[in-house]
Length: 175
Image (tube, rainbow, N blue to C red; front, side, top):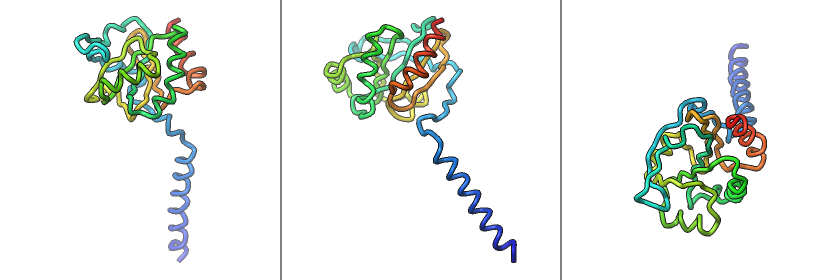
């Protein structure tokens, strides 16, 4: 008789514990299996010059940011002024990966809002984004001189993330 009463109570308490743990997790801190692993290599056309290509191997020996964005992305619009400001400081090159977008719309978006990117690469079918494990846009990666992903920001880059996470890491890696 006691077991009949205790078992449902134990199941309920375990469920409450799992729910409680889930409520305190930060959804933007999804662990990436690519952290501390080589960044996927790619060669894609440039957004503004479809006949010119960018090969990620060109970045060997440099610390850089890869920002995955799209003109249809509301959150990208939120982080964009911060990226424009960062690019003007010339601390680290920012490369854009235009993800599953329309080239004309993306170019218009950059023309209207400013272009923070050293270069934007056009990933129309999203294959490179998939290689990077993109959950959704925006996402930003810090890649070191050896081509290793050292940090992944899911969602818009915030002033806090930039100040406390991204820029200190970039400075250490540039060291």
